Amino acid sequence: MNPYFGGGEVYTRFLVLAFSQIGWRSVLFVHKKARYWQQLQRLQMPNCELLAIEDLSEIESHLPGPGQKIISHGAIDTRIRNQLAQHHRLFAMVHMPLYDFAPDSYAGYEKIFAVSAYVAASLKDAHVDNAWPEPLYAVADIQAYPPEKALQPFQKNSPYDWDKRKGRDLLCFYIEPWIRPLLPRPYYQRRSPITLAIVSRLTPIKQFPLLFSWLAPVLAEFPHISLDIFGAGGYASVRDLRKALRPARAQVRFWGFQPDVALIYSHVDFVLSGLPEQEALGLNLLEAQYCNTPVLAVNAPPFTETVVHGKTGYLYTDPRKDQGQDFRRLLQQLQDRTSWPQPYSAPEHLERFSFSTFCRRLQTTIHQLHWDQLHGG
Image (cartoon, rainbow, N blue to C red; front, side, top):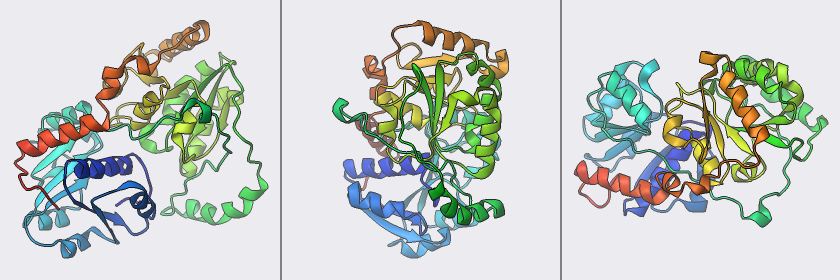
């Protein structure tokens, strides 16, 4: 029910596609303001009926009868959850580790499914007894550009994704369209021998400002390594990230939200993660690897599940533990080496996150849960 398109929405889309692949029909309830779903449905969402609603309380009135199988992405309001669970089978996908949430967030669900072993471990540590034991993982839902199209031009966009629930952001939302046409919109060009990139929404869970409070001084020691940021965030998120990056500001450029991330991956050398503890999996890292772009991530779950050190990228020590010493060693290594990891050299790892593997994993789960009807709601 998010009006914005992020990792949870990407997951929702390939879950719907997977149900279709194994012969199920689904109904997808989305927020009325989330108009991007209509476009996605026209492109490729077979066997899926799209229903736009204003509030979750409307779901019950759209269901054809009792006994429907309902999957929510994240926990829903307790009152609505209990109401739906009286007459239907209620399940949930858990997209965030539970360490910062109340253990009863998912009470009332028949089963909940983690998207990574890290998230599953957080449920176990919280003594959540309705968690499915195996993670469902995710799909790198992206296709790499062929070489002849991989270097298409694209322009700089706004780095802001205004949160209209906040007064300052709402004011800026109305002011920016008048200012933006006056600002330059250069086409992207590489400017350093080595280009690192952030390809992500600039949200608090990524903790980019905290990460770069440690990494920016280290990056400044390597003037031939640049950092390009592809993504947008609210005013405070962008402000805090710019502040953290000041020591290396001459090496940093903000390019705003870019709709074609596969094109971005074809332009850069490495994709950087944020800090790990609030991440569930790191879909952007999987997408980069599927485009044969290696990644750099903190050596901690969930990134230890999605990165093969030395093959699909490099893992480095959390800079909060060593003040960025391992990251400094890594940048020196990148600068000195003539070859870097190639994710395509680890096909067995990439296959874990393929659509066909996800469908098989989902089919096994359905069988074990005795969802024995061919078509489900």
